[in-house]
Image 1: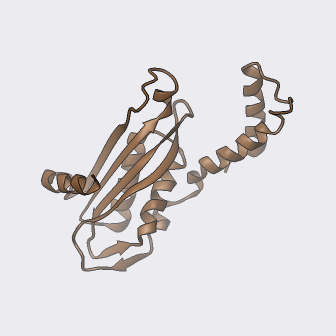
Image 2: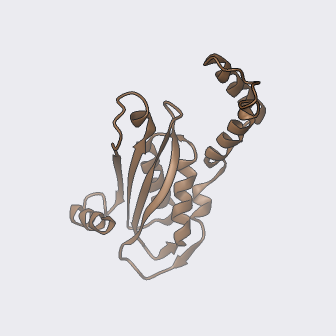
Length: 184
């Protein structure tokens, strides 16, 4: 839970540090607005992925289930700059499936934390693999990082792709390629 009072004070100090007057008309409410924004953007700390994945349904299906193009946005823990993109989640059920919206919600749990993409990809895969006990899981994340496009090297259009595989998908390159083809 964000301490809104501390966050407001910090934003006011930041405004002063960059040479602004936090009391001027256009900025007077900015510390409160930014504090509330960070409360929303970091709500993943108050969420539990395993709880979201606890309601399952029996299924004899043991073919790939793929949910693709789950949009997300997060904050880079190195610069507090946004990164955003799409998450693709595939899993092979082992007698049970989860409601499809839960996969998007699990993505939000980890995206709504100060984060690095590599870690987020693995956290999503691990939570699904641990909670659902599927035969295999594959998570692919494609993202644009504003810490690369707005500052530093300033390479607009650059995307970072990370992949995490678990279970039988870890070593099955043909099945991995089949899932990647479905995503395209």
